[in-house]
Length: 192
Image (cartoon, rainbow, N blue to C red; front, side):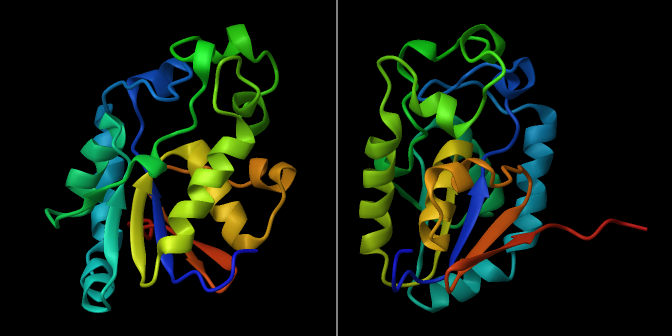
């Protein structure tokens, strides 16, 4: 487990067209769907009281440079300025980017499969850049990024190994609060 990591609210980008098609995105991009935009608005409502607290405590808002995360951040962060950090980009899945998951990973999906992609970054490369990013945080942060990166980031904070990281949930339209080595899933209450 990483020590002395300040509180983090992690938001995965909203649903994209390629998520619907079950294509591997990696470093490539596809636009948010209408559902993805709605998910980002749900995140904005969740974060409305949290962002001012984070900024008031000297913290920051950090976003992947990829289009789907940037589009989500523009909505979810409600117009607050944010820093773009290349270390928050999704895992590079090399030769598999743009391919249907069923064609290249078969029954295996997620972290283990993506980390094994030919010509890709691999688990060690992803873990190293996430660790570097986390080691520089000195104050609370809101992060908008990606599914596989999020599993690794959350797993590192919670002291999990790669197999346990791969079993972490990977929801969109919510936030994961990471604090004191644990995580809490934050979602909007269902409307009656």
